[in-house]
Length: 295
Image (cartoon, rainbow, N blue to C red; front, top):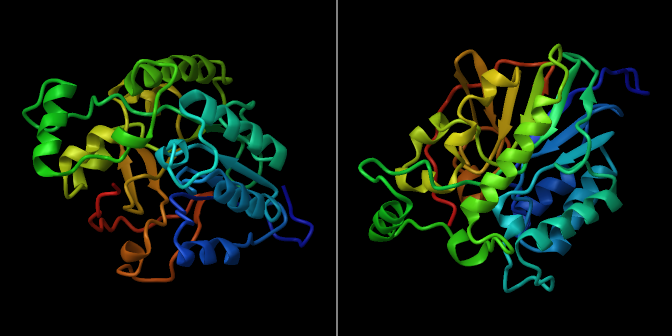
C-alpha cells in the first residue's frame, strides 16, 4: 500500500476524544494523516451526543483512507443533552447506520485486512461491553462489588445512563456480544494475525494501575482473558482507562490510545492528541501515569 504522495500508509489509533470539551474538539480539527493511505482506528468515547459523534467521525473519514470505529460507554449513554433518546441496542444500531452513511467501518461490518507496512493483518473492531467480572479484592459477586464501590464513591455513570434494552442487564448484553464476536473471530483464516480494537482491554492486567481498583468492574470481562492467544493477536488496541501506554502480556502488545479529558492530558509531557502508530509497529513508552476516574 503506497500513498499517492509517495509515502507508505500507516495504521494509526486513538480513543476517548471526548469532543464535548472544546480543547478536545480542537484536537480533532487538527488531526491529519501522514499519507493518503493511512487508516485510523477510533476505540470509542468520541462524544455523548449523536451530533458530536457524527461531526467527529465524518471529519476524520474525510481525511483518512479508512476509519474504523467501536463504541465506548459514552456513545451508548442516553444523555439528557442528546436530542436522540434511543436506548440500548436501538441506540447502538442507530450509530452503526450513521457510520455506514459516513463510510466508517463498525463492529457490524466485515473485518477489513490491513495490507500496508507490517501487514497483512485483520483489523477486528469489537463491541463487547463488560460484565462486572473484574471485581474488587474481597468481593465475590456483582452486588458486593457495587456495594463496595458505592461506599468509596466511585461508581461509573453507566449505572444511570447506559441502558441495556432489550437485554435485562448490561452483563447479559455483554455475554451476547462476546458469544457472537467469538464466533466471528474464529472464522478468520489461521494464517492471519489480528488487530482487535475494543473500547475495553481484552485482559484485566491494564487495570492494575487504577487509582481506584473498584472502577475495573466497568472495564471489561474475564470471558476474553485468553483471546490474545487464541486469536493470534499482534496488537490489542483499547482506550477507556485514560492511561495511554504500552504493556506486554504473554508476548502480546496492548496499546491504550486514549486522549482523555483536558485536565488529564495537560499534565502529560508532549503535545496532546497524538495518534499512536500500530503498524508498522514502534516501541512506545511504557510509562504508567495514574488515572483520574471517568465518571
